Length: 292
Image 1: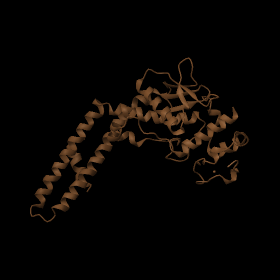
Image 2 (image 1 turned 90 degrees about the horizontal axis):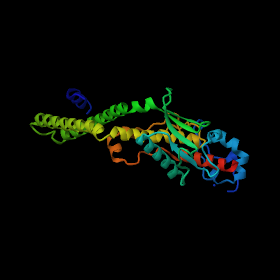
Image 3 (image 1 turned 180 degrees about the horizontal axis):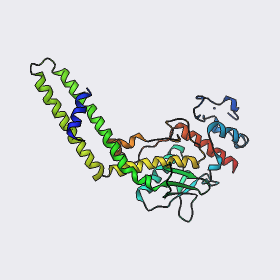
Image 4 (image 1 turned 180 degrees about the vertical axis):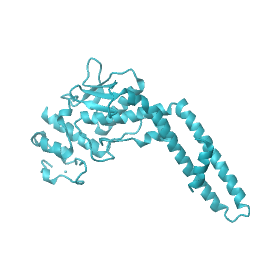
């Protein structure tokens, strides 16, 4: 960002055995419900008898569970040599395994797998999708490639906005501190100019580091870990969630990937799975186990 524009911005911002379905919890008319502990502790006979009703109530799709074996695992194989994509897949697997408390997603091989992750040249409105019949998670190659400049731009914009806010807070606080001084104007303007200059230098350093330290590549790795985790959720039998903050929301996002400081400090990304995602998955797995 040019110094003049930054200067202007800175200066202008100063439960039991069986529980009837009718007693299950409600969280809202349009919201995707979270299965309770009671719902998750039923016998297999209960899940078999109520599978259809449970699917309608909690947004489950059993026909999507093609990657699950009789032991309730999915053997994952990455059909790509891209090391960053492989890391994204490992992170997505660990997100689910950690939250579910056991290994559902395990490493597979080219010769032995039930879930394949790979790139496609197909151009659609989606960045990724789960194909149950093919047991594949497909990621758009073009969209994947285009993420780096988008991430860099958003990361720089967020850093700039944060810097402007910080400058304003410091300048305003300093102005109050020296309000009664005779040479207020001189000291205020000198301090203000110094803060703007320091912020500009910090932004210039961040812009260089985003590329030289591959912070943008790291952010994309974390972004795709969450995208893949979402698709893995479909493979567990979860439909899209109506709750915006759930990882299974149709338009789920990961705002943290645009934070320079958060991405730089993180080693394992930002696990997007919340209680609703996890409990729905536990229920879907319990029903799959009961039916197989």
